Figure (cartoon, one colour):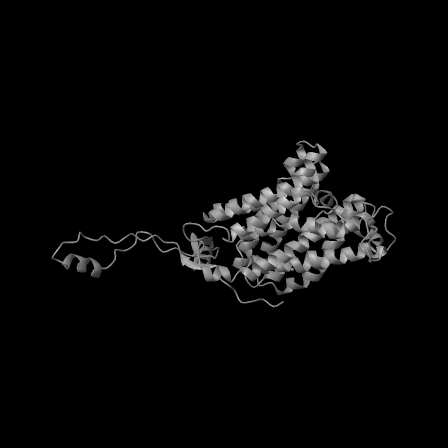
Amino acid sequence: MAITAGVILTAVATVGWSRPAPCPRASVPLVTLPAPRLPPLMFGSPEPLVKAATDPMPASPVPALQPGEACLIADPAEDEALWPWRLLLLVVTSAWGANFAIVKLAADSLGNSAEAVTLFTAARFLIGATLLSPALLSSSSRAVLVSGGSVGVLVTMGYAAQVAALNMGSQPGTAAFICSLNSVAVAVLVGQKTGCVSPRTWWAIALSVLGVACLEVPSVLADGGGVCLGDVVAFGQPLGFGASYVLLEQALTDHPEDELPIAALQVLVTCAAALAAASFSYGAALWDLPWGILLPHAPDANAVSVAGFPAAWTVPASLLWAGTIASALTIYCQMLVFSKLPAVDASVLLTTEPLWAALSAVVLLNAHLGPADFAGGMLILVALAVNQGMLFREAGPRLTYNLETPVGAAADEEDQQQ
């Protein structure tokens, strides 16, 4: 039984301190040097050996690699320094996973009306955009605005594909499983861009996707659902979200001082789309929408309530969480993480979201875990361990990549434009 299956129907979207000093991911270029040619050792005549040792090494036919041109050998010390950022991303992912159950509580209180949930989502991103928008004034260049807006468009495309797939008959478990394939999309896109994805990362991706399948697919099989057009549309989720992660990583590499403005642009674009969807859903202008239903009120008779919490405040409390934590704070934290952690590794950590959603449903919705849920959780944990080299190590050094623009490339482009 998949705990998150019933939750994703009502949660349209589940998706942020001073800036720390940059921590480079790697610094050793992967350059193959030819082995020196040693002459045969002659007994009784050490001169050839001495000559071979003193002759200068022939020049390498492989030119030195520039930043962004090829794979790099990961520095073990620098890789260890990334652990705080991995833990921070797990905290962010747990907040996004908990958001499923919290939005489900709000949806129940609103009578599970599709229009009301759409309005709740619009209000959520409106709060997030309001909190982050002042950061736009601190953006360093126009290019930052373009990059942040582009990331926001891709994220919105992922949300739109999710909503469209569900409306076209795709089951929640199917849509959630397909969404988890964003880690595959990220690895493919990064592989095409840099030619560098570590083998153990591919193993971790396969295990994590299998774990999500254990969490989500049993509910699909139990409901007897087949393949529909909505399932095809659902593949827009991993494409939109996956491409946004890769573009976000590049944007933060190009503009390392602009995490907050980029976060603001991402949320602002999603907010605009959510407001348009709410207006279309009700067939009314934004100022004529029933915003009052999001204020404290008596919940629906069939709503699930949290013990010890005032039922009348379920909707506004959920909205406050979704807007301030799940939309503003966590997305800013995501910017910080993606400025340090490779997108491929980050996407593997993000596959833990269904696991956090299942655990949150147990706590908040009185849900129960089955054998498939435990198996899925274990596979996801094993995937994380594999990706960090805890279970086995590769024969060669671990590879990473660098997206920094080569020195002088920007100036060359400007000269060409002139």
